[in-house]
Image (cartoon, rainbow, N blue to C red; front, side, top):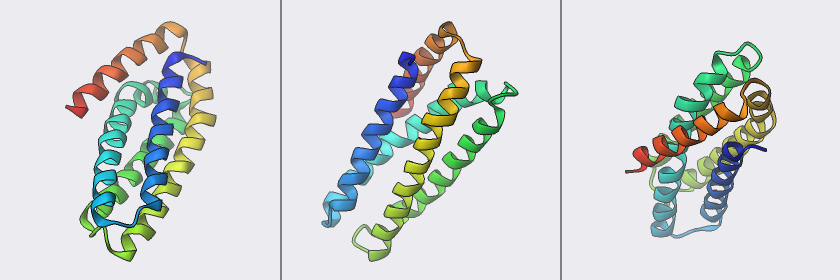
Length: 145
């Protein structure tokens, strides 16, 4: 597996780890801190992925459908993230919504690692993947700062 796809997998594990901690946390302050950490990880990842990875896959006939689905899953993730942001972290609804959010993320990660990674390996060569890795990391860092 190319280094770029391993980088995405590493990010996915990090986000899943934060989500697991959030689901086990009850204190409002702890939830708030973990939620901030989650946003700091997930938003730059999604935006960088869309800009340097999905847009390339969208141009190829074999990978277009899965790339478009990935864009839409990111959109839904963002909508729910904004709703979570507005709710009080101590509210019962917040944790319920967070659990649904975690399911959305799990589903997306599973599909991405199965379908989109496979698409990428068939439509992109190692040189393109090297380039994407560089652009992805650069974009993610800019978005984080």
